[in-house]
Image 1 (cartoon, rainbow, N blue to C red):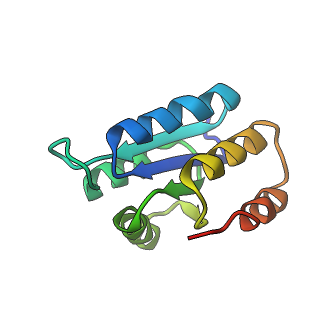
Image 2 (cartoon, rainbow, N blue to C red):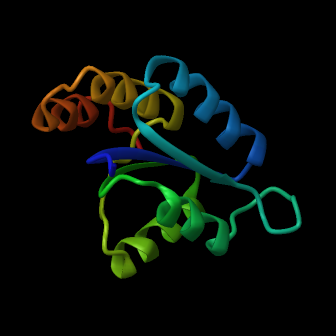
Length: 124
């Protein structure tokens, strides 16, 4: 069964991406969550292939994307241009944005409410 809304976390650090995934999974066990972090050779940075895979393998049709730094955002924006999925991108703190969104998705909050809540923490 395909989930309607999911979350993708993109970080320059594989450990950060994985850690945030673990944290938000605690409050949102039913939300499709994928992540990508680091370069292909395990360094700090981003990998377009890893980012693309995180979006492709997420079973949801609508994806909230959270990122830490500029090139992560650029990779997400490129995916937005080529993906069949609807990607929602807010310039909010990666952990706080992902956590609050995951909790609200878990409790079936109205998407308009989630979006308005995210708008209140835009800071990038």
